[in-house]
Length: 520
Image (cartoon, rainbow, N blue to C red; front, top):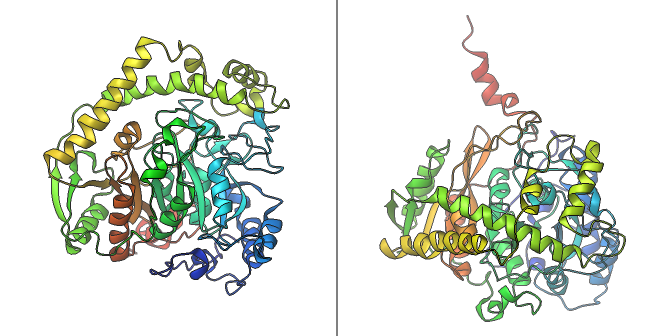
């Protein structure tokens, strides 16, 4: 069934200002592609999930209220917002009002029905979106074990890459990336602490945008780190990402990091320009290249030059290893404090009220919660001494300074460039239940994650049929610029790669021919 599913995704009309103005790209080839009603579009999306997601396991649950939401929109219950009728999937660490629990993929939170919308979800509803359901994720946003398999959760099982089913789809917003790539919805919301939007977007061949930390509220989002966490859009096109970001961005009195958001936000879709690269000086992060992406990256650089960008090579950047180790100390400390604060707000049906409770729950339910890997990160976090610990404070100050003011900001200033580009990450690796993730490394997205700066990934090609992405990174609050630069590249390159759902890369026709060798 997966092999025969055809996706003929096309870009949204470049001049549209609302979702309703454009032909829905994710519906191309579907029987209801011409259906103009929200109910029709929602039914079609649900049917696609039921038809092809059994093996992908990208969606944990369909929202049982989705069709009621669609009927209300068709009935004119609210003004037509910019996302009117758009089905949107939500990562299952983000709360959604209604009967669905918010689990972070853990059986410990199967009773976490809070009956409240995260502010970003409320903003999506106000913009006219239909909340279609919840996506699978790496359990606890991939912050439970150093031996984890990205995309696995006890609730949702193992998510598979839609381009080759034996390949990993990266994490932690795995389900969001796969669902959009497979055409189950035009948009999904992911969250990122360190690569959890941009990595799954890159290896699934879609657009992913990690905003400036503080542009989008984190209230009612199960946390890892208040210093680095942010939700963001995952879509088929940059324009769709900009439209969704416009809807979800804004200040929230319950999240102090967002106090500047209202003043900083803009209409990101109308700010896009196909000529955005003309005359722009852009730094090429040569220190973060390789890992199998050389040919695709060099072709991407040629496209940037052809669009009028002035490229400046940046060959060296010292200290990435130290940034990573110091940031990890920050995440361990903030996870314990932030998660305990979140769990205190959950309903009485949630019996695990602290990180210590979760560790005990996992140990008591090891056959279902830890059949493949353990919880050493949980245990390490539990040993931390709190947010007043001088070692934690020093680690945060050091990692932020090295990644932000002395990292991205210094590179931009020294080389007189407005943004940085590089390959996002290596092509997807194999799902490996024996060794866990065999992450091949690469990219410079960690700098943007630690600094809290915007990071966009856009499809730039493929390696043996597996997608790879091009990253655009800029300073704090440069979200509109970064999206527009990525849009200019996207419009010129047209590198979107639709999934083929092959069992493995080795089964693809081009690789099979190579494996056969010359006939004797």
